[in-house]
Amino acid sequence: MSIPRRQLLQLGTLGLGTFFTGKTFASGKKQAAGRKPLVISTWDTGIAANKGAWNVLGKGGRALDAVEQGVMVTENENNCCVGLAANPDRDGFVTLDASIMDEHGNCGSVAFLERVKHPIQVARMVMERTPHVMLVGAGAQQFAVEQGIKLEDGKLSDDAKKTYEEWLKKSEYKPAVNIENTKGTAFAPLRLPNGDWNHDTIGMVAIDANGNLSGSCTTSGMAFKLRGRVGDSPIIGAGLYVDNEIGAATATGLGEEVIKICGSHLVVQYMAQGLHPEEACKKAVEKIIRNKKGDPNLKDTQVGFIAINKQGQYGGYCIQKGFSFAVCYADDKNFMVDGKHML
Ligand code: ASP
Image (cartoon, rainbow, N blue to C red):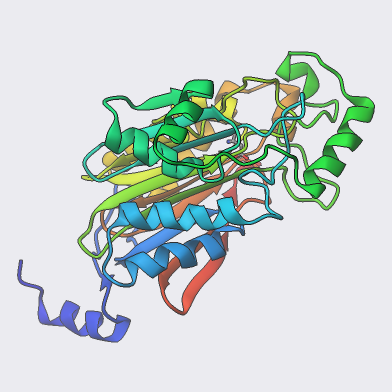
């Protein structure tokens, strides 16, 4: 494809790795320039994770390697809400979910996995070394060990232990999510005392210099969930979806609501209709809000989506104020964006 001189000049001023489309999307809006390579990820832990991903993307590496390396940074952070240092389920065990998807539509995931530091690695092994997509619980752990992964001791981190002991004082073992949402049992992503949303996930999507897309998502799930509960993050199409011809999306927040609308797949389908990533995320959020119309728990429910398209454009949208995502497209361009919100 020959690039007109004017666009070549723009490429020169915007720097290598920047790609201008100037395309008008279905919304009628002229969309901003896309960028390649590019990586985006959920919440402020995304800054460090993006850095990890950029170590791969910035050297011309594959998006799949970038999204694995990127979220491993977060899984490693001891003081963070993802990985083994995170809050446990209501029986006091940390159980992890993760998924990964590449540019060929291959995907792998693990759920209800215990004592493994990097569930995203195991998800990739499921994708690349088995004929399956998803392994759960004891079987996922057994597979991890067979692949040479060392099991950790399973003890709670100091922070998680404190939070769990605090939660136990008032614990209510009622299974109904809708009842508990407003009771402060932290099943739903209620606000934490510091005003943050209670969240335990990093979702990441990236496009590499070759224009290939991949995504990853890893989580300890909702704090104090029922034992055995699995959220959206390891469910391909819900917490993560990649279509290399169109775009990639991932989700965070109350996984049950994301699963109900096959959220990330829906976002990608909206992009397939020509919507910009931000508009596509917004449409998926609108769908959740329509589903929950009249539900008093809506005000305590947070879901955020982020997405990129094949042109390297990005966007995010959420239900409530307070969701942000990290965007990185150069060594010195790694910054937070406040997600636009509906309520
Ligand atoms: N979506 C995750 C889940 O429901 C939680 C989160 O995003 O923090 O398991």
